Image (cartoon, rainbow, N blue to C red; front, side, top):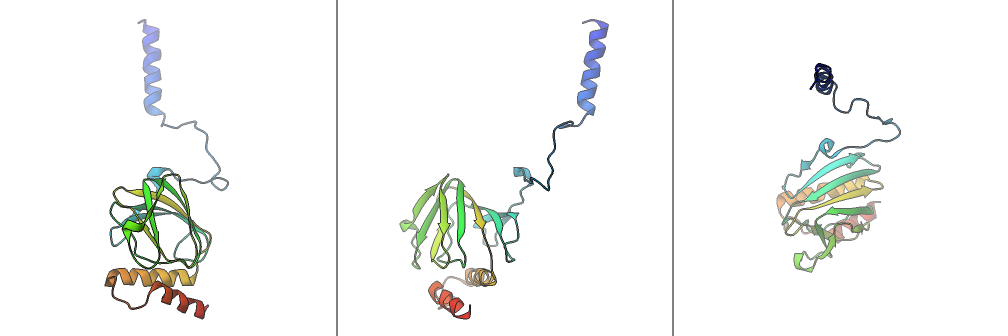
Amino acid sequence: MSGTTRVLALAMLALLLIVPAGFGAPDVDRSAVDFKTPDEIKWVRNAAGTNEQAVLFGDPAKPGPYVVRLKWLPGNMSRPHFHPNDRFFVVISGTWWMGTGEKFDPDATVPAPAGSYVIHYAGKVHYDGAKDEESSLTCNIVASSKIALACRAYLWLKSILGENSSTRSCSELKSSNKSRA
């Protein structure tokens, strides 16, 4: 290797070490297009340790639209419940298992494999979760409401106190919410 070639090689190496990665890469106007890479998504495990949630857009605790990612951990399913608004899901990975009605029966659930689109209709009792593998989904909520917050609080309290802590069923709770609306 000649002296000139050696100097050029060392100069190129120095540039590679000094110039930060991505230098000169195009950037987008975040007010026009926004995104989060996987390493920027903050996952939070629920108190029961059954799933993890990442809020991508909006605030699930406030009225208005929001989008969340959910990870159901293996062997965990919700108990029969309902939502006051329609919810729209896309299963990203794994298999999400779903059942309907107030009787909790994991053996009666049906699979929604990765790529499936699922709607939970407002006021309809269902339960869901993962069986032997993690299942990851995106949930798009068009709107939230005070009734949704009350329902979440009720289900959370019921999960803390135990399944038999209340004599009210999901249908009774739904009826009482309708009469107040």
